[in-house]
Amino acid sequence: MDVSRPAEAIAEIVSKVGIIYPFICLTGPFVLGVWLLRTSLGRKSLVDSPMRRNNLPAYLALAPLFVWSVVFWALGTTKEKMLGALPDWQDALAGNVIICIGAIPAVITGIVLAKIFFARRLKGFGLNPATIGRDFAAALVNLLAIMPVVLAIIAVTTLVGQLVVGPEFEMPRHEELKQIIAYPQWQLRALIFLTSIVVVPVAEEMIFRGMIQTALRSFIVRPWPAIVFASVIFVIFHANPQHWPALFAFSMCLGYTYEKSGSLFRCIFLHSMFNALSVINALQSPWSA
Image 1 (tube, rainbow, N blue to C red):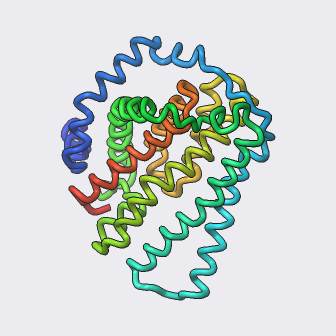
Image 2: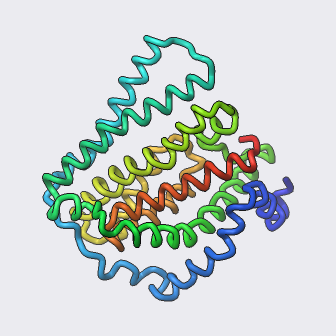
């Protein structure tokens, strides 16, 4: 790729992601533009954002994340001792099983804490079944708005990487996307769908938005700084630094969504849709990572 011609380089990057993202990018800039115009470039977007009333101690906001990490480590260690070396696809299968099992006590911990420390209990936490329908529709609109930004950041990150490292630099795929491309076994692919589209969005949104962002908002009061700090923690939790700029933008959208709506369901749907697009696109148009 000739990085001396940025327009052609960006076009080549976008062409690699198949037909799904270009379709979204036809409508996404319009949605984002309307939001920017209505909110004075975002400055007025959260002026009426209410606080989520709670008396959650700051240290307990990290409890679900701590539980998930400990269970994940314990199960991973047990797997190595009991099963030893497995064929690659079975090792990937076991890894995703561990992620799912580890998320269960983390989610339970978050629900228990929400019931104890949040006013209006789970509804105050953002889990109100009555809002599921409109939350799903709103999440789709939010996805249209943020996806062009994420793609643009991926393109810029790739171009910078090629300028610094060399023309051989490419954005690495997420581990689950590598696995779903590399291994055709239906058991693994079905589990990756479950992990990426259900388990991870539920657990991560409960942890990073519901617990950590709420604790930061209670301490900082102003919504945008709380969203920024929670997004920094979110991206650090993900292992690949090359993904951090795009993940930070996506996390900012998730944080905004939570503060604007007060609904954790909306964040979960948005996160799930984003991951679903990544998985479907990886299956449609795989390219080497």
